[in-house]
Image: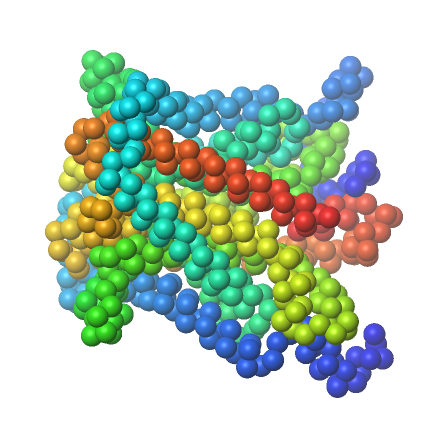
Length: 314
Length: 305
């Protein structure tokens, strides 16, 4: 290895065996970048240019009308309720599924995934059939003067449904890869279950958890189909930002519609930035733990079993 | 792995002070259980998971199935097979399939370029791939429509050529390409990253050219991931609503997707009809979910073996 790598011609020969000719490389890169430009960059840029088409004043005016404010408020309320509930569920489900073996685990995992594959419109309809005037609890709710459908609780429920798997999905593979060894050690050393989770498990999963939370939040704030079915579109009352965007757009108030949309686009950009930072931190931590003295994974040396556990968590 | 005191000891996280100094090690009688379940919280977390799952997912799901069971077979069949509904299936499935195929090709290309080559701005492009996950569908819908409409950035060049994308079935395909874009990239990317270079070196030293190596060595390795991503993009596209309704034009029989049929029936208070169509979509989602699970199992076995 050391000898052959001194000969530059041999290096080039070895590289050309496992990569493509320059013209192929550049063509592929160009085609891929054009695709990204057309399908990702332009739509994103269009949101902001359309919002600012009539200047910054019109943009701010679009955001300052009371209906826009109430939409922003409702969106925040929905996210503040839905995300923590799914966070608790995600952690509990990941603990049960990743740390233990039990019959029916595969079925449970499939059910946790289910909301991902259900069309948002169908999800909304399901809640109408449970809580709507014609639904299972409709008459009872009406008798007690509780509104769920065409009101805020319905919007919250529909949002919880569509964002249900996000955090669990992120945590289950992560916790499975990390195994139980560290937690078992903590328990054997006398930590309580809660302490074990807080001081052993949580530090290991924190980046994945954060990533799941921000994705869940982005979807919760941006959900359209399911919320559209259960909201009833009452202006200033049951419109979230995406529904507000729709109404304005259909009324040909393009600038105001794109102004509201730009808030969601900024949210999306912030989400992507946090996600990149999380990934970057995660890689750094894994690299750092792989570099620990005596724990370098020298071909899975059986002498240091602990070190292998940590580095295979990647 | 079988060490009694595994990584936690050397990993730098055991320096935290012990919070229960007085607690004795596990006494004898718990040992039998401890052999299988050392960790606590199984019952608590599993029952909470099941409770939450039942309340949020299974009760609404059974409401849908129960509502369907109140229909006779003829009523059901009438609701799910009307000409307008049939046209919507054709559009939804056709456009979803087409969009997923486009994503299969370009997703593989994008994953390949991101893993194998270096170019300026690569990290930004990599982050941007997740945009369709993060950008609300309604925003994507109005933005794509603004781009493709007659006076839009792209539309203005297409109009003189008599190409109309907005408010046609082609617009539906474009919106679905957008929402499904990250799936193939994100399933193929890690597999490409983990691939051993030695295989390719071996192929080339045995005389294979680059294209043969790709077809015979690389492609078989990534094909389970590729198919998984394709199925995910397809499943996502079938249920998609928000981005499509703005760009589709929503003309009955021509550019009306199936989720919109459900909304239309709901707006006419035809709950039974809406439910029947929803069940058809739900069954298709279930089947796709099982297919995706099977594909992922195949992928894991491929990676493990």
